Image (cartoon, rainbow, N blue to C red; front, top):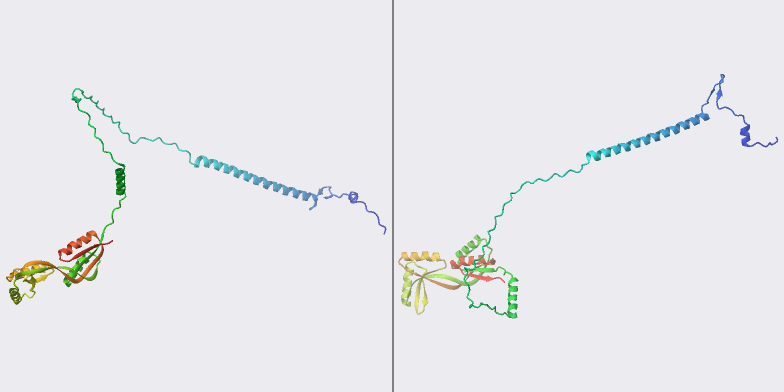
Length: 304
């Protein structure tokens, strides 16, 4: 088979007979075939028109929303936000009446004719101020500085020792007194002066004194005793620490026809001690007064 040269594509296309996309009926009318070129164009045009319609509708909604927001902002600004208020004028709540000031009376000029004239011969009296040395001035300044810098002294505290107590009754009485005052104390032992009250019946020669002692003891006064007094002997019917007991014994002896006199003495005795520490001065002085009146020795020592 012989090979023949084919014409170009454009010539082939132009050489092909043009066929209509549509078919004609017997009456000469034409109709479009589905899937033809015109249908494709029509569908593309419809797609473009729908897209444009959506864009137009979106633009319209956005514009309408912006207008609504502007109207709402305008309404909020004019009707909701508080505007400036006018300041009400202040009213005067109280107005005091004006008080008229009294006129000051005019001062009277002194009458020169009434005052007596001073004699010309009296010289004026001048008082000379004594000169003060520099040393004196420095001393005064130093004294004033010391007085201004003085610090008040601290209150004095005391340690108080009561006793000795040589009887259990006296010790119990002292403890009860301190307990009633709610004071803390410690117990100890020691030797100290003890005040005694002796009931003296008389002073006799030694022989007579011994006979008088025997007579008193025979009458039931068993607490009688004698003590030397110089070359003589003193006869006693008892010795007491408690003044009340001494007074009771005095009245009992008087009822028996025995007259006695009180002789106060002080002896060094060993006994119990009550010690109170770190007491203020007022309480220490109060204890001293109370126990001394009862014949109890009180010793006060300051705490350094």
